[in-house]
Image (cartoon, rainbow, N blue to C red):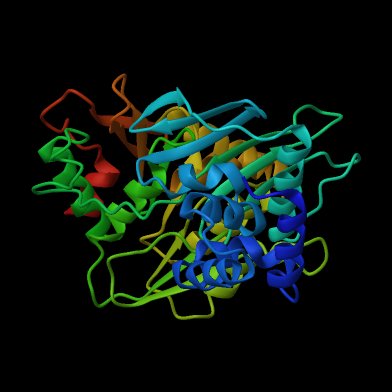
Length: 381
């Protein structure tokens, strides 16, 4: 075990001149990680084992004892309940990991570094933070007096699945019936506006990428996200990212407005969360920009439309009596994605949006599509 005095000396020598708020981002880059590793090795006595070297580098620049878990491709979530209780989700199942922090202060120090890495602070007045890191991973940190210190990290993975065909695809994993996959492909090509709904970790972004893969190659896509994570299988894509911060922050709603000036054939919004974002997206759709794709947290197709109406009501930008009509006119199809009992991601239902509300046209377990209601049938004809 490397003694604390040596750790302090190496920190002073190797980390000197590095922006503390950028260290996590530096360490996430494989090439830069290798460079930092060699600089640390040069500052250590000869003969230090590789395992101790890796642990020290992770402590100085990365996520400390969590680093091996975050480097494990099978791990999707890392959850720190206490210094001695760390859980991971691996291959869809939660299990306790064989790692631990030295003490609560060690967890708290990492929480503060995560917050600093995205330009935020953890304070007594604001003892929690939701951080979206540069690699697209999401971290939530909580400190006293609310609780903790605790950490919840969802790793970003660039999972790419086709809708149809052999594996990897939604059809091949039984996440979507063949006729349902064909219908969604037709919906995208016909420039219908599609809302993908589901809970956290259900696969909304993965399905959004799959749908975008059906967009004709000649169209120009403008993609708007908190952090660039929608790596789309398309040749003509422009990515716009939000800029966090208390002053001068640039959010999804601002970027939707700007996207309208960029000659988009389609606007894709990674996720709609706030009233202002919902209002801006519906405004963009109402100006004739068909073929929009976006996601929203909801437990069903009907729940997605209800939540969108609630967001619009909170925005105050749409007259109360016009909210329901505005939502019904904005989207043509709602797709609800979820995790099955065996943790496999599946499309649970597809609903066509009519003026009177959503009409379910396919549910998981069905092999054929029900009769299409008039509005969607007209769009696809």
